[in-house]
Length: 517
Image (cartoon, rainbow, N blue to C red; front, side, top):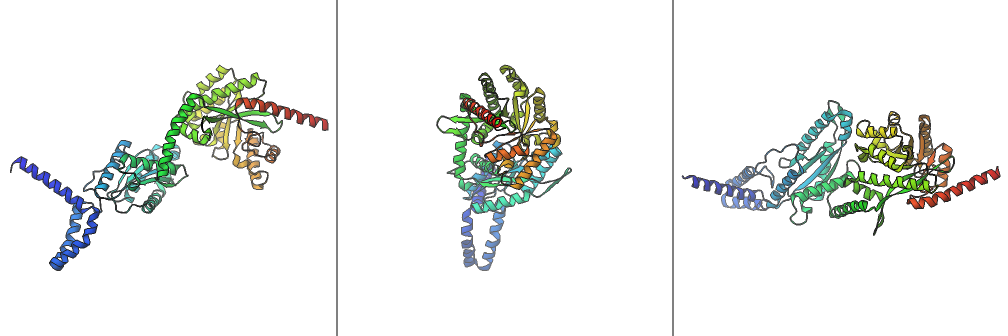
């Protein structure tokens, strides 16, 4: 036999094998199985019936892994793959499923809490947990499913082609995956408890001939939605998410242009001293004045700026406008001791942050004591070491006033308060709401104010919305108040007018007090 003839035979055999394999594990095979068995019995009696019954499973096992749509053989996957490889794997699975007239699905799983484990126990413990989770996930899935890690804390599952992958089935599977992965995991440093957020998309939900990249992207979008809805959330991809994602992309482009055009600027909300009633400072709050939509809610565009990596640029804009406003108030004879600017953990990670702020203060001729740096309590609690901690300490040494924002919502220790040289605690509005009507709320607030007093820290109560709340906070010893009950955030020029009117009201009240005394 010539080599050419041998090659032709091998090629024809491979083609026949592939065709037979596709026919055997296709969906139509299940439809023909009863007819084949019955025909065998009619034509050949019991012997033929037994032959069909035993022969078909043998052929099925020969050309598949024992379930519809499975590949004849699958090479082992690496534990960690990049995005391009993940999309290629999804494309291969889609191709197999469509060839067999079946369905597949993609699951994205995020292990929440690994960052905390890294801080407490180190990177070795985190890697051990990744290995444990990957092994558990592979054990939970079937032989033809593909399981890989696609990030530091993210895992992907591609389901082998299957007959029935409706929403109920996929939700049940997501719940089973979540319960299996959330079991306590032990490392050399102890037992760890992690929560799992899951997003998934079935191939039947893709429009037309969707690609592997689209399947992966849909699952990732569903996971993003799950992560935004608290720990251990599960979300399925839907067309509404497609519209939201398109709107988010549009917003990303718009917000970057708005920042460049100066449409995003700080507005200022006054803070009052409870002893004198005078303005003790203002907080700068970013506002986007959209030419068509009006004022865009901060949570919308702040998230978009963070996704676009523009938070540093935002802090530069807010700081420059705030110092410009402060100089303008000084020139107008308006006494505003300081302006407080919010800095996120992203901004506090900047290696040049301290030098940049020092340069801006020098440029405007402002002492550092007139700039308040607001830092979320969660940032201090989560960053006991590293660049964030060094920047906060350096800003305090420069003379800036450090305000711990949303106090009571994080887990900052008393040691952290002293180590970071915090000057003021901003008490979260959740402690302030209904304090004049809720005795338990009042006791809790009194305990927080007592702690601050013993530590020698000033206090600012946020979210004050009524005269009664304002009065009670003053009685309990809170130093400063801020909220809609006092004034809403406003542009710098509006604040000038408000401050003049407020000074007149305070002076009038003092005169009344003297005359009645």
